[in-house]
Image 1 (cartoon, rainbow, N blue to C red):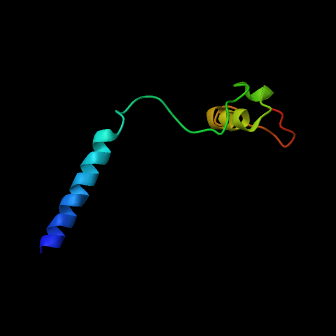
Image 2 (image 1 turned 45 degrees about the horizontal axis):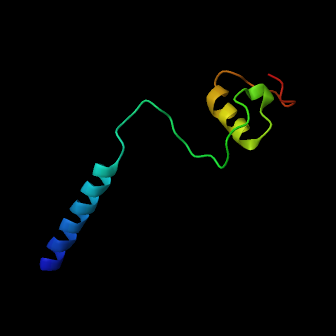
Image 3 (image 1 turned 135 degrees about the vertical axis):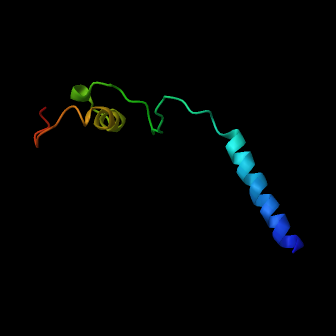
Length: 70
C-alpha cells in the first residue's frame, strides 16, 4: 500500500517536473542538424544539410524529375 502510493507520487512529481521545464509553445519549427547548411537555395544545395532543408521546405512547391531538374 505504502509503496504503491509512493510510486504514484513519484510519477506525478516526474510528470510535473517535465511539463514545468518545457518551453512555451511558439510558431517556430525546430529540428536538429549535424552541420550548418551552406545554402538555402534548393537549386544550389551541394551538402546534405542544404539538401535536407530544401526537401523539407520546398517539397510541396517544386517537383524534381529523375535528372534533378525542376
